[in-house]
Image 1: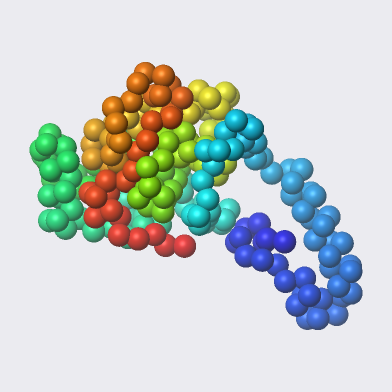
Image 2: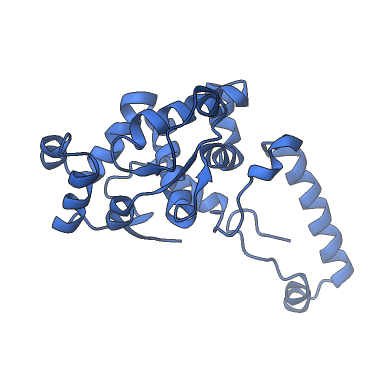
Length: 223
């Protein structure tokens, strides 16, 4: 069993020895708690046709860590940033100098955050999307992957707030796909493998990966 707040395995046998409780009784309690948790926590059920787009091989943050995803990425405890001259040069080159003044005026973290805020606007919801996307992109963004995969993993992390804003999951996937192509790719956060067709944008089936500028800015993650 995983401790639901930390994501660590709960040692039933060790707890039995420490507490003096029979192992069978400990296991029965664990099973009962698992059933209760499964019946009360909201989850996103991935549609059968979408299981092929689920991602593996990245550290899924446990619930206690996810609480931090509702905070601003500026000064975030989640990421280690480097806003040095090499990073600024990388963004400047990728965007053709279009956003140089804006980047120097507010800084790269604020520049990144404003991309999300200008589109999604709601504070906690926007922070959650921004942190989630950057977290997954840091770990999986060296591969060409469909935007749909990112949207599905974010839905799995935060089904409640997304479900309130987008009662239909497909509408979230489409909107996030449009946002990624229109803003994240044009501002040097990620790269397009090829110019997507309209249908690929609607479904999120075009491929992206993290840009060199992104990896220059985000040096690491914590947790």
